[in-house]
Image (tube, rainbow, N blue to C red):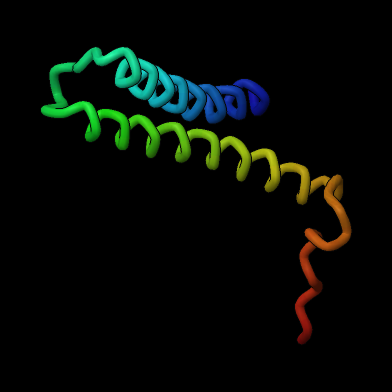
Length: 82
C-alpha cells in the first residue's frame, strides 16, 4: 500500500508537468486556450507548472535517497550536536 501511495504522489506532479509542457508547446504553435488571454501568459504558466512538477519529483526522489543513504557524502545530513 505504501508503494501505491508513493506512486500516486509522483503521478500527480508528473501530470502537472506534462500539462505545462503541453501549454508551452501549444504556445509555440499559436494555439490559445480559454482561461488565458494572451500567448505569453500561457507560456509562462506552462513553464511554471513544468518547473514545479519536475522540482517536486526531484525533491521526492532526493528525500527518499537521502533517507536510504544512497546519496553522495556531501548531501548527507550532519548529525545534530547536543
